[in-house]
Image (cartoon, rainbow, N blue to C red; front, side, top):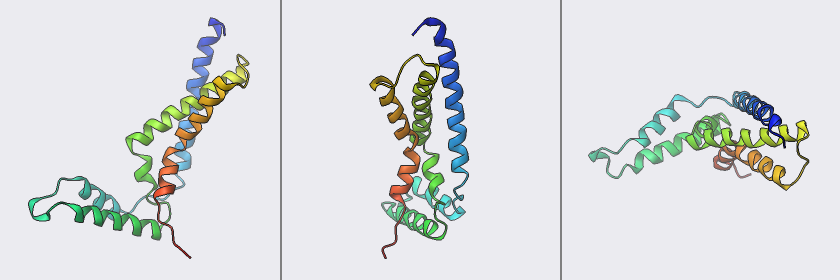
Length: 144
């Protein structure tokens, strides 16, 4: 790789990463917003318990029940709680960079498909899918 290819590589990779972040946001818009009761119960569960509340587990149980009810009433409505977590934001950002960089390298022809470009690409796909995976694994399922 020559030095005259570094600047376009970085520029196109950042532009591709920005495109992927916008794509994530557009996909997330398809999910319904959580009800206000879920947001209130989540906020309540995050607060330290008052003395009369005991150990504070009642707020956690109320939050869990509100999440369950919201997901059963409107499937996908709890997705936003996972999408906005700091770990999910970081995973989407790093994942989009790790996807965009190898793709730009392949397009510009400075490297072929090899282990050095395929592994970051696959890791980026996994990180980009992190908020969707956590929501999918935590949602309630009904047994038939």
